[in-house]
Length: 208
Image (cartoon, rainbow, N blue to C red; front, side):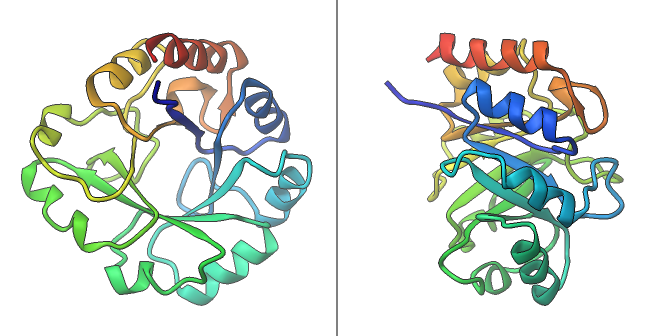
């Protein structure tokens, strides 16, 4: 049986991180892109991370930030993984120390969007929906049929419009390494809803 990893992204409150940890989350995402509705200060993240089990990946989400900024924030916030959600080239994503896992996000709108994916030698890929004016956490899905017959060379995490209602379908149809949920388990941007998170986890496990 494949165990689907679950990543809850856009964490801004300690209570939500601890609730997700109690449900068995594998990765928690913290957004350091200051134009995001889910932006969070690195010092708050460090405070949250200090109370989390060691096995949970603490993922920082960055958008076209400098390498120096990324490493500084990663150190301050005690991150274990770095997710790049902008136009970062392969050589940038490959330039970080081996003690960080690296996730490159791709915003998919057509088959053409897939072509550059395998140029990136990162730990994981994250596949998200393309929207012209917002990066991540949009609640929009992309057409999963885009992935049909395309060989993806790294384990991938499926994102984009996932909710408790379609999480099980995603597991059955796509068999991803992991699922990334943000707005689909929120009561408002950055505030997670425990009942929705619980349903999301239950439906993923049921589908497996």
